[in-house]
Length: 307
Figure 1 (cartoon, rainbow, N blue to C red):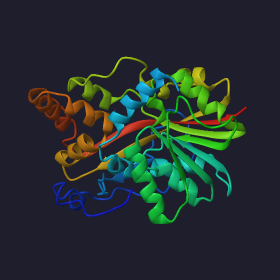
Figure 2: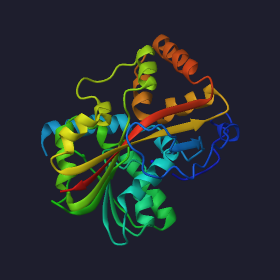
Figure 3: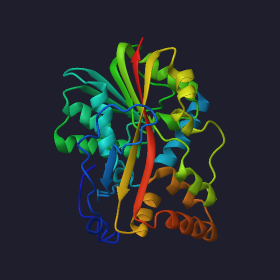
């Protein structure tokens, strides 16, 4: 698995006032070998504005759009800022480069690439998130093309982009082989790829204890396994896997739970389907895990150079 700031404290229990900034991590962008354990993304929760081919692929798009729309995703995306910075730096973007941000969400990577002088296209299945991304670009006076579409069927030509990125986005597509093939298809020879993925971790275990269920099909966490990624992308890219830690801090577990339960789209969608009893049980489990006011998760950064 990246917004415009405003004072949302009244509606979110004074979250903005409660949250303290963590370290800036000036060293957080150096290359890091897989399995090293340094923190690379330590940020505090911030307040942001909450505003709102073929038949089978169309059904997938509708379902995914429902899942990823409606939540205040821009709030959690804001905490990914150091990761977005790292992704853009890894792509070594030059002025005039053609960059594609796949499953761009509210535009965290796309905006940064455009600031670096790239010609940027962002694509996402959620019209809701795209509207927020367009608004953010307009408010900065940045020109970015945002398209609604499916990363399993990218509507672009072969080798059309110099760099392709996806921050916690393309990994959630149901057809992983097809998604990997599309990422490779649109990237020119010697072009760069950067995507991030969540591994199976303590947060996964907490979710299971909370009773959370996941739709059948491929597991997005497989993108964090080196062997699996090489099977998906290794024929097309020379690959390197690096690691990092995403970390957010707030004054209370309640503040973190409010953020997670309202701005993580899959979690929010799952909670909305639960009975009062099941939802209360889930909240107790998550709050126990978040009691310290800290949420930290490892992530994997997959870097590739197109052959």
